[in-house]
Structure formats: structure tokens, C-alpha cells
Length: 98
Length: 175
Image (cartoon, rainbow over all chains, first blue to last red; front, side, top):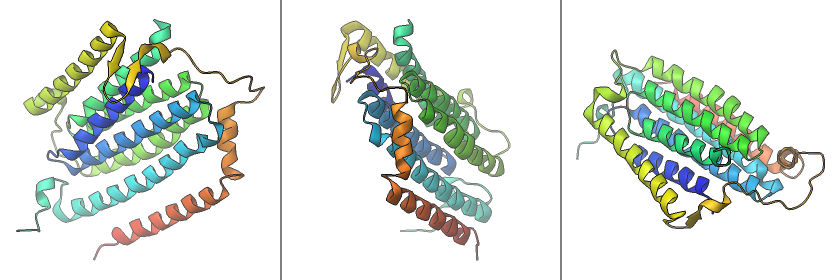
């Protein structure tokens, strides 16, 4: 397996770690989710192009479609949180008190 | 150096990812993602996938990142944090860069790295060739097969996008 794959899997892991550790903004975690989708797209495209698996070339496009759906949904939730609390800070989401 | 251009581009890709995973203010994170998207497009182009590289620029950067930029402009604070304005962000960024350069150094020293798979440096400039593909691009033909072999896939994704729009309108209706 060539070295490019190692770097792209490393990028996926870095983005996953960034998603799981919050700081103040919810938006940064959504950005890390987008980064995971981008690295998956690049990894799938490179493997498909390298092995000349022609018919699977439609798979990264379909992945991008569902990633766009998911990003739009996440952003709409963020917009509603920002409408209620003024900012998108994670510490505002504290209705659960147990 | 040109034989290792793909490896260098992938190192810049990881550095862009570390840039937004260290979580500065979201507008600067979006900048890191745009840089990574551009470099990722370059990697895909080097493997001969011109249509998919164009998809990254048009759909991913031009569609999704623009929407991210607008919502960031809506929900941002007055003095956004850059990478050097907070010790945690700077420390995470430098740790991520250090990790990447240590990995690159160990690759250059041993010519082989074993993490879960065995990665060797010999395959970077060898593209497996399974014969002559004629005058058409295989990747474009594979994507064009989306409309013949993948009709059901198109119907499912189109329907899910429509349902996504309806769900988002219901969420943002409020009350």
C-alpha cells in the first residue's frame, strides 16, 4: 500500500480526534465532520483510480451527496441553536441537569 | 522531486487538517478546510481523475464551504481566535505538525512504515496498468454509468435530498 494512503488515513484520524474533543464552538466540530468526509472521498477516489475499478467511480459522488445532506442538516440545527441562544457555544446546551 | 509530488501534496493535506482540527475560531477552520480541499483536488488530479477533482472544487468547496462561510458569518464572535492567540490551539497545532513530520522522517529513514498496514514508498509513482483503455477516460465512463447501471442509486439519492430539504424547512420553522 503506498504512502499517500498513510497520510490520508492520518488526516482522517486527526479529524476524528478533533470531532470528539469539543472546545467552545459547535461549528468547529461540524467542520471536523466535513474534514472526515473530504478525507474519505479522497481515499476512495485514489483507491478506485489506482485499481482501475471503473464502475465504482460513482461511489465518491454518492458519498459527497450524502455528506452534503448531513452538513446541511447539521447547519440548520446550528442555526436554530444560534437563534435561541445568540451564539453557538457548546456550554449553552445544558438543559439536561442530572 | 516530481516523482514524490503526490506524497508532498498529501503532507500538506494533513497539515491543513491539523490546522482546523486544533480548533481556532470557525472562520479560520474553514480556511484550513479550503486549503486541504484544494490540495486534495491536486492529489486526485495527479492520479488521473479529472472529473472527480473538479467535483471537489465545484461541489465541495464551492457549495458546502460557501454555506459554512455564511453561517459562520452569522454566528461568529467579535474577535475571532487565530492559531497564535490561544496556547491550547497553538500547542495542538504544533503537536499535530510534529507528529506528521516524525512520521515522514521515519518513512524517509526506513522506506517502510507499519501501523496497521504495511506502507512502503515504492508504490507512489507506479500506477498499475491493466492495458490500453482506448480513447476515453475510464473514470468518466464509470461516472456516466451512474445513469445506466445506477438508476436506482440516482432515484434514492434524489429522494433523500428532497426529504432533507423538507426536514430542514421543518427544523427551521421554529415554534
